Length: 348
Image (cartoon, rainbow, N blue to C red; front, side, top):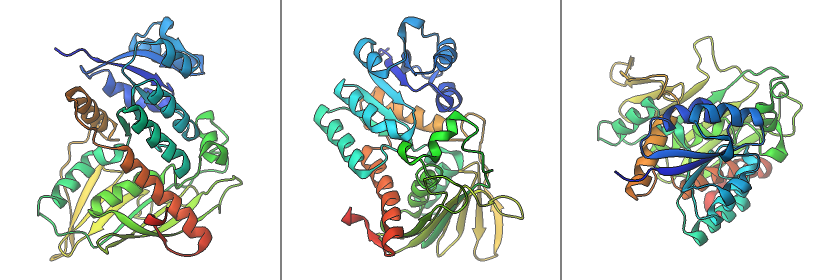
């Protein structure tokens, strides 16, 4: 039996506790050996869950990189810390798994990929939404000649948040701060962008958008509308907001759908349900999915697939270049909003 991958966790907050640990603790390929977080309560909670002793708890991730026995790290911290921490882990020669986004700017992202290449390490970013039951089944249908190539698509992530939502919890404050890489397009809509592009079966080439702050007294966007043209000429839209109602009256908060010259596929709840519209009869039918508490967010599928690839010495399913492309779409949307014109991604 192969020696397990010795894993350190940089950031031990909610995303690790709620989404990563339930899967990591089941993987025979992984042994969690060290924890880093500036909040003692996070270290205590995750330490108790993982049985990592206090000797391997670090308030500063740099101390963990210097002292702990590690092969890989997962980075699950606020957006503005990702680039710095990925680069430091790369310099330590470790495999790096980072929560999204890879960075808060294309300049930072380029530095990340330069460090990854320079130190010849494996690097991947958590694009969990394409590993939900609905997304996996939709991808299968679209790539098995069951459906023609999509021609038009749309995605949305609309949340009617209260005005104090971003000031009531430390876990949310940074999301509404420009200095911390916040904003709805780079946070909640990040998943809709790569999910929609995946189901459209063609990369995005041109981006038009309006990215604005309309609802709250914050210094980042709380509303974004994107019009995307794909390399094959197909078009799609993404709408996101923290101040718009997306549920009720027959509407859905999270939706991703693609329309082909045959049938239409509609994924809701980021893949917890999948429906198919028969164009011939104009009737919707629900596609059976095996949705559980464990697999509903896609983190389980992503982590299982990624660590299986690492153990086998093969490339993880989501690459740094894929994460850079998604970040480029977000940056292009901001530029398009300022310039009032379409942005060709090859310009960036």
